[in-house]
Length: 263
Ligand SMILES: O=P(O)(O)OC[C@@H](O)[C@@H](O)c1c[nH]c2ccccc12
Image (cartoon, rainbow, N blue to C red; front, top):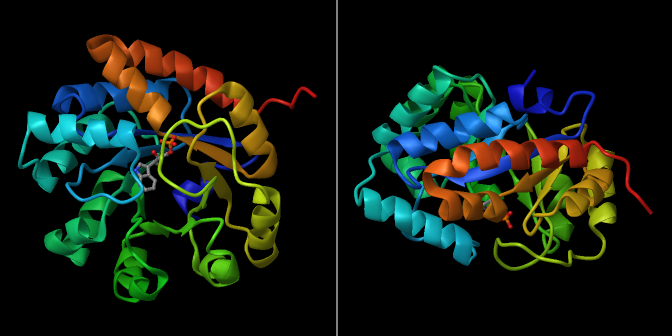
């Protein structure tokens, strides 16, 4: 079974996100290891990209810091970071990346490297369902799940997207860009229920979640919660001291996704 699907077994999953090379090579390794130490079930590692979609200001700033530190930032350097991470933890990893990065490296070479390093999934926000066709069989051969994003406006295509999914399904909490929020779209529970009618693949909600209360609420609706901007803010604010803070925050959020809601 998929290692990513496995991470949801008998519990709700907490999935933090940080950007690779923010603040630098060693900082990335330390931050990911710190998230794992706090109990992250999967860590989503963002590949900085000059032309991202859906990134809010916090994630954009992280990408800028990462690319300022290393303007070329070759994909092989990021794979090397993962190699270092793997000396310290076997936490399941997924990349948040863009189709052109994978295409440039070569679908076969990229997914083979992922398999070798324990990158079990790819979230590719600019890959439409129609274009999965070429990458999907290659990724599958290397046991790399292509994690689809379902948004409140993909409603009419949900069954199709969900039926093709492996690993988990990324449910976008609300329209717009990434970043902390206080309100989520109506109808998230209906969205998740429609997914559950066609697949057993777990769902995780992301976009806007930052407090433990929100994590508890979202994990009541879906099978897990994804948190990016709040983690990236910790990295930006605490620099070298970020790892300890990330571990604490992850412990808190991991407990929150598995807590019973207070009403
Ligand atoms: O930052 P937030 O609101 O916690 O949301 C997670 C998000 O940042 C992360 O999954 C992500 C980073 N870049 C993206 C681009 C598209 C979709 C999702 C993402």
